[in-house]
Length: 203
Image (cartoon, rainbow, N blue to C red; front, side, top):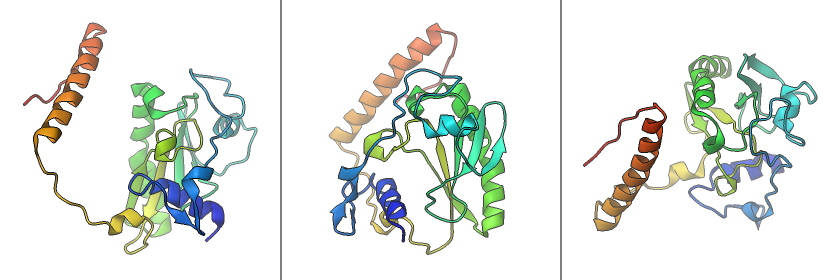
């Protein structure tokens, strides 16, 4: 397996095992972020961002789909045959900095694109993945969604072999849920003040 593919696979599985060894070295410590450090929407593209350059036609890519808000390309360092990326045309450095309308536009293309990718690759399953932030394995700081076609027993994720345990509902977990709901209530009140209501679960 090519070294870059091994590194990307280690990064994608880092949410379960933060220091995956590849060829005897911890791959996470040698990770370098792209030059794209954007902040706000950049209609003309962010300097140094490979995705902005692809969108502007300044860098090569194998485009699968394109509309007014997003583009889908084949990943140039795929984890498997058919690994694709859905990318917004406007520059946002992370998912949490991306407006909900843009996320909605990207996600609305997932059924169309994933069905085509699965049909052509002979797969019947796929992972939908977002690496949001360095600790989650994000290396290009322009929001994007991975569509990774899967086959039975392809052994792509080491985390799939880990035994999952049922959550033990204790005081610590209950307090965690309370704090998250409290944080969401603050956001909800802010959205309500802007006329964007939401519904939250309350115990």
